[in-house]
Image (cartoon, rainbow, N blue to C red):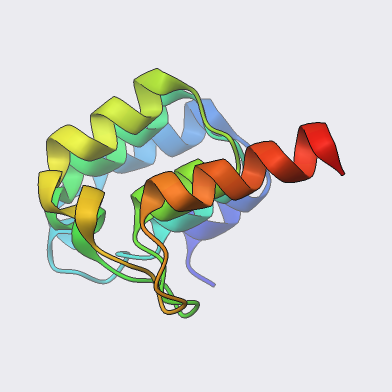
Length: 119
């Protein structure tokens, strides 16, 4: 695990922000494309999501090992509408792309709501 991933994993958001700014070239080379997924999973604030996308704009279009795009992950974990909008703006096509189970991001959100409120 690289330094940026460790910082995200440990939720050291101020250090993550500085790292995104200082290591932009490294991130742009695609060495840390999974960091956006990890940041979403760990509940990173919107400013962190924005910093990662600014450093690596293609991160919004990269699938994780489970077949999810970042917008799928955001819906799956009930992220706020601001985060969803940032991810949508970064990669609008993601709204209609299915995950490995054939579910769109909105379908994932629906399943999240059902699990939280009705089961």
